[in-house]
Length: 197
Image (cartoon, rainbow, N blue to C red; front, side, top):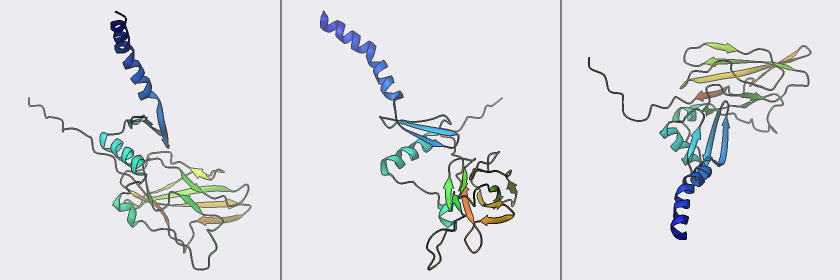
């Protein structure tokens, strides 16, 4: 009788135990406004509800510790160091540079020009040529107010100003700061059937 009661108790409690394990995140990834969690079983969950394909890509990247980069981002110009140059310029663009970004509102970052400096970021859509300028800010980062177009390459530059001194980054002859916004994932599953009326 005691064994039967123990089995019934186990059957009743097991789903709660498993649910508790599933909800306990092993890893939490923050990508702008999106939060992606990975539990101890390798299940991927996101407040943005990733497609099965994107969840598999996240899981593969975590297991292999390598990120698959879209082919288009491999053609973006890379930052180069001139011979004899000791390091990066004091005022420079930091990120994103020659890469692909998941968020359609990525955070653009740069090094400070000087204490008290203010900055204006300019973004240009490489396809349409449309230019977006941000407001003057004192922080060394800025997020676009509206979502950028997915699958599009952008060039960006930041202008710093302090006590009448102005500088831009990146400045020629350095290559421009570029990034591509990762295209939206195609809906998973079968196509919706057309209704015949």
